[in-house]
Length: 110
Image (cartoon, rainbow, N blue to C red; front, side):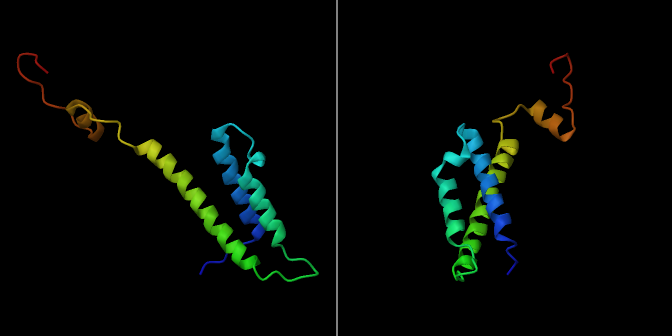
């Protein structure tokens, strides 16, 4: 199993992904219920000198998994946007994409 890294790094990554997602919506990401829930959960599960939080590792693992999901969805959408088919293309256009030219017909028809 790979190391999770620091919880602060995971929290910052989650907030960055929320900022990306809410940037498209046009409203501040700090006003979203997702932001408030994530920050409250991280605050509730932090380790203090008075108590040892046993659920911290579990929360950190779930947060890292959710961060991976958010990043993957964003990157998939970007790749889909870039490489998605543009519909049917003409034979000339397809030949040009692969570096060929179609032969010319005699009599100037093509």
